[in-house]
Image (cartoon, rainbow, N blue to C red):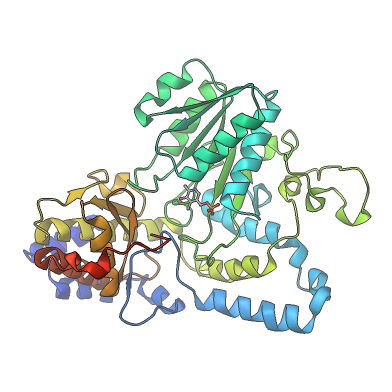
Length: 424
Ligand SMILES: *Cc1c(COP(=O)(O)O)cnc(C)c1O
């Protein structure tokens, strides 16, 4: 079923009913995928864009890694279980989700560290000078990594410009452009191919942060001729808290770029134990230390679900869920302080939406107390993610029902909801 059909059916009922949502769920070919996840009862989880839930696949693979591989086979598992190649093997699986070739993706370290490695490698390949262009309001770690890079490379100038000024900023040329494909707050999504072309016309390499895109929206890095990319695996890919991140380097650049973090696992022959560093001839040069085997194993298991579903089908369902949520909020949440903080068209966004409200923090806490888990992003944004692998239309209906009630009764004003925890 297409998004248009579903919207028409819901509209035909007048006000959108929970029964209409349940009827659509009953016919959803993706519905059985929900059974692959271990979701706590009574929870509507709208935060899978920040930390995906545990799956049977991840749990099973992690259990096997702990009991059989680590527990029984001990150090032999580096060879017998192929621990040593996990960064490449799991990378090859992610490659199919982002339009890359298997040998162009590696999973290791965090997104922040991978950004640093690729950004510094890119400007070093340009003589350690030139302009690096990024966007105001980009995810903080992206901005901080570039600020740190500028301190290390005094001849690099980092330009942080509003999105609307990007083309003008590139008119004078650049060495590197660093952008996040789906904005972590607004959800606004760049045209990957057109923006990459813009960077190339400026003479720059293009580095994409795909943290809110991978597994959520169809991506074609090869088709866009994108040079470099990084992204999280604990969000839509459900790899688990702190799961290692991926990095992508276009094949033609792999011998030209050198990692600024030369560790033994990036050596051409790590177990020759030579005194002199000799970078691996391929993407493995971007490995640094011993890979996080347990995190990689959980992620490997979490990715099993993608053997049975294509990203375009998931994206179509996510847009339908996001559209339903927006429509229900418009119908039922008449609060003069509530404002949509994302572009009006759900198809122009990734799979999440934000609403601004001066009491956003308290409202999110009041919703969490009722089992509807979204998150808050300073200064006043309530963020709701629509992960299509396990969410149903009735979940969306129940979430907006709770939001409408919390707003109408102003129950968010209770003292307990104002206390701020360390992580929001
Ligand atoms: C979540 C996120 C990160 C997180 O980076 P870590 O190194 O895993 O903490 C980076 N960039 C973007 C755009 C994100 O949304």
